[in-house]
Figure (cartoon, chains in turn orange, blue):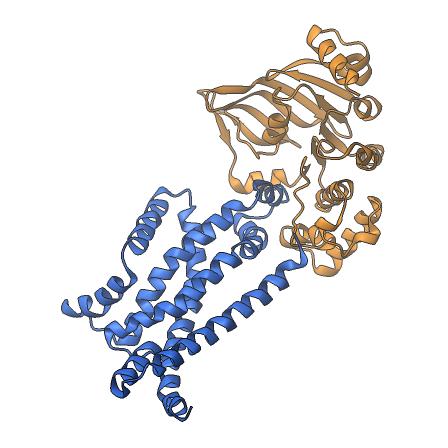
Length: 255
Length: 213
């Protein structure tokens, strides 16, 4: 039983086709890493899965509910806004640039959506927020504002903010790419903890080491297509395709 | 000095007219401008084009013309409005157009990631606008808004054209009657005082919003 299925996803920006037929499944509790060169479409794919971008054709099904499917002419038709809102609530998203709300304190960042969307009262929302902030190791920053935090701390707040909505799937869009190298570790550690807690995760990343250590499965994308997928070991240590080999050697050389 | 003191009662009367118009205009134009800015950014084509047309008309013609049109022009076709209402109406219509453009720039300057983050957290578009975008927008537009507010104080002088006794007209009447430049000088002090207060207020507001970056 898959918690997420995407079938034959096509997506173009203007006339450039960035996703040329992507099919993937995700099992509950699985950690999937998507790697590939920039421009390969991996971030776009992730953004399509939670409808930050709309697809041109294909099917996306989350936890047994259809978010988008094809009409008889093969064009994507989305479900009603109400259904989509409910389906999307099952997914949390962490962005490359954190996107914390700068005018809200750390605590307020975590309390906002649970109160507005899930109608928690302030006491419940605060309780949940404090638990999560402890989990990401930022109990001492509760009343700080985002600009007072380091990039790594901001990203950990962003992870906690997404978790505050109790998602079934967590999506990470290059969560460490905007960070100074010495700050990536603290973010990756939080993500490792999540994986250990059996959170279902999709991680678009350049961190090959992290993928190897944490991911159950790795997808290598290039030019809008999945070139290769398999266990982390298969794809990262024993790649079959030339393009995967080239990419991996370039990335590993750069370190 | 005694002469200045003797001017004060009428000058203060004129100032009251000025301030009343100023306050009525701001209380209405500041929020209406937000609504107009959102309409201007709407994906509903009709609304979008209508706002572009509106802004073109009200920025594209003199405020004095709009004032005269609403008071005298509409009077000719039988729509009679009293002076003060006509003044408020034309000022609100005009200033809403300018403010809408300032707000629009402010809204568009907020990083897209902010609405995306709100979106994936499940906030509605209305919640995203009122809780995330607008609060950040207000901080950014304070400097241009203070410009507009200062302009508004001085623009109120235009209502002399429909026979209202605001500060400048009172000064001019006194000057002609007494053959003295002092009334103008006094009026200038009044304007400077009012605008000085507005400046201080905006300085305070900017400091208040300085708690985040």
